[in-house]
Image 1 (cartoon, rainbow, N blue to C red):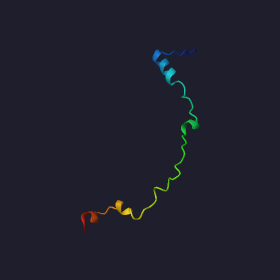
Image 2 (image 1 turned 135 degrees about the vertical axis):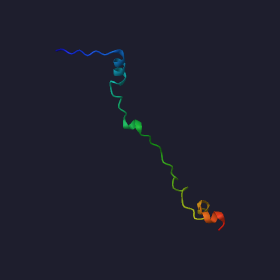
Image 3 (image 1 turned 60 degrees about the horizontal axis):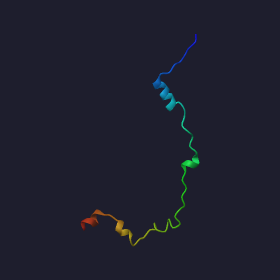
Image 4 (image 1 turned 180 degrees about the vertical axis):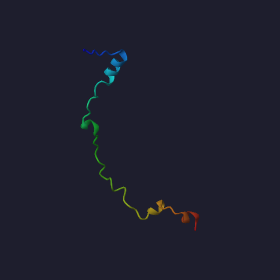
Length: 64
């Protein structure tokens, strides 16, 4: 018994579009390298005199 497989136009279009895997992406193309900022930690230091600006307390807000 001989089996012959035929495709209609919709099946042929699907095979042309989805019939193979996409191109492989290299890891070099997925990674972007940028130079680090040299004074990265200098601007984020703890300032005890200015820390009260960020302190939130309901009792202080109500004047109690």
